[in-house]
Amino acid sequence: MITATISLNKDTLNVLREQDVVVFRNRVKEYAVKIKMGLVNQTKLITAASELVRNMLRYANGGQIIIEVVSRGRDNGIRLTFKDEGPGIPDIKLALTDGYSTGKSLGLGLPGTKRLVNEFDIKSEVGKGTRITIIKWANG
Amino acid sequence: MDKIPILRMGQFLLVTIQVDLYDRLALDLEADLVKMVSKTGARGILIDISAVSIVDSFMGRIIGNIGVMSKLLDAETVVVGMQPAVAITLVELGLPLKGVYTALNVEKGMDLLKNKIQLDEEEEIGPDDDNSNDLTE
Image (tube, rainbow over the protein chains, first blue to last red):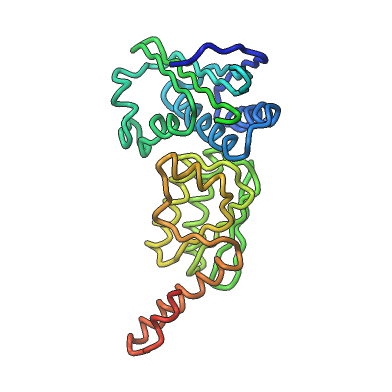
């Protein structure tokens, strides 16, 4: 469940090639530094983002990412929204299971990512695409 | 085209990763290292990741692969200098990098490699050496 938040600052990026990933990671880092997120949380957020962007490239040939600074009460955080028009995920519950993968990976991407962030929301429709939203609070 | 340099030092190969790795670069490094081990007959690989701020599951897999592949070619791999935040993230991600040896810094990593290789050589000569077990620590 994504809680009610206020969006303060917004940036949209298209990721279509592998090289875009480095640019995207740096942008996330800039945002995280701006809201004074601690180093461990920064690392968790960027790693989570890296996993999701890789999925997006591998399974959907890229897509669009929205980076936002969000605020809830006194706490600031970063919200990342990954939108693609790929094949979609038929069984989300299964995809969130450790060790499950349709590709050749270790199957840690989605479940691992979920553990690294504070809020994780996934919506997917077969044949239409997937939308994943994550939030990491600065003090989360 | 970027490339990560591999330095040869005696029986060892040294790699310092100083740039943000993207997938192609990591895959190239994996292939280059394995080829280099085969070509030079190196007995150990030391990978310094002290400048790496992000290790995701793909990168972790590459590091693990390098460890296993080099082992098949009779070389040990030591990963040194992991940042604390990276260690925390890797474990939470579910990727504790079991296949490779780790050391705190380059110096300790080199000692570890030297010990491993010395042990191997002593075993080859014969396990009659009483002190061979003392070298494991």
